[in-house]
Image (cartoon, helix red, strand yellow):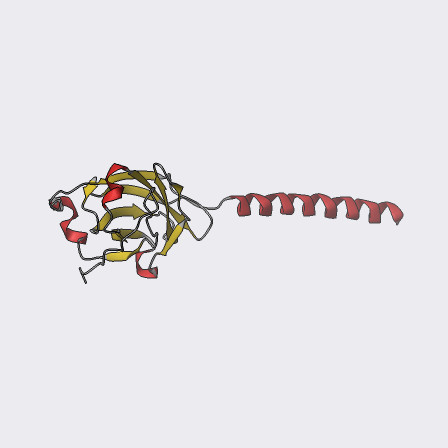
Length: 179
């Protein structure tokens, strides 16, 4: 009798271990990371202008959650990460623009900026980061390329970063009067 109990216990432990191993393998599969297909933004903008960053991304699992943006400024450093939520209807494919209000500050003409974007999904996967660079100068606004016209009115959200002059001077911020 004792032998049968021991055999049953060994079989139970073996089956439990296999089931636990199989379950562990299933939870380790977290799906596919989102992919940023393309970005576009003018490389040169006027101080006080609203900078638009156009983005196209996709996710095979259809569970994109948000866009993370980190700004780096020469002579100043890094700003806090800004998060823009992706609408549920765009969780599989998203295309549109993020906007950043910039200060009317001539001292920013010597600074260079890099905005790093990545898309995250609900399973914790992240796209490869994409860098978008810009600087300020007194130039006329750049025309939007034809390939981005179809999503020119789809505002994804604002990048809530308050750009500071590396000299400590900031006259004010521009406004997004596009809507």
